[in-house]
Length: 112
Ligand code: 5GP
Ligand code: ZN
Image (tube, rainbow, N blue to C red; front, side, top):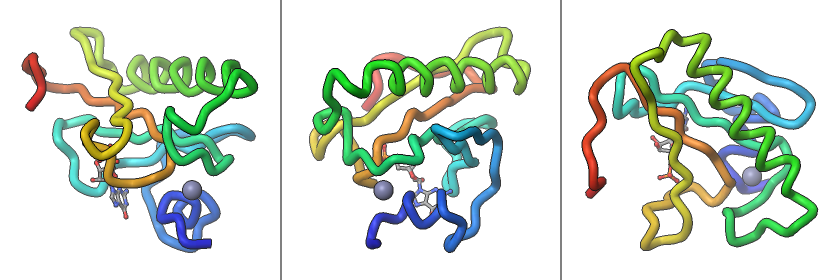
């Protein structure tokens, strides 16, 4: 297995867990871009949004729901941002689907 996030999910590379269930694992980003920066990943290896099919619709909804629950747990009542970078021009650097949860500061728009 060569995927970094698969290794994090199975525990062979350490991470700071934030939430986990049978379908997903959420952990703190190693280089946080905001006071709260959590990555929500499916346990199943899916390379990116471009690798998803209709069979993943419920899982994708679950990832967004979990990210929102974490936002509530972290007290981000003033707002937060969910991001899924996709492909090289989309800024994706790890080829295992993940939802970024960013919050705890004012986030600007448009992104770089
Ligand atoms: P992407 O650029 O693919 O959207 O996001 C990848 C994210 O993974 C980046 O925010 C990066 O900081 C984070 N990351 C990369 N390697 C590791 C690691 O080994 N551990 C953790 N916790 N996060 C990582
Ligand atoms: Zn993977």
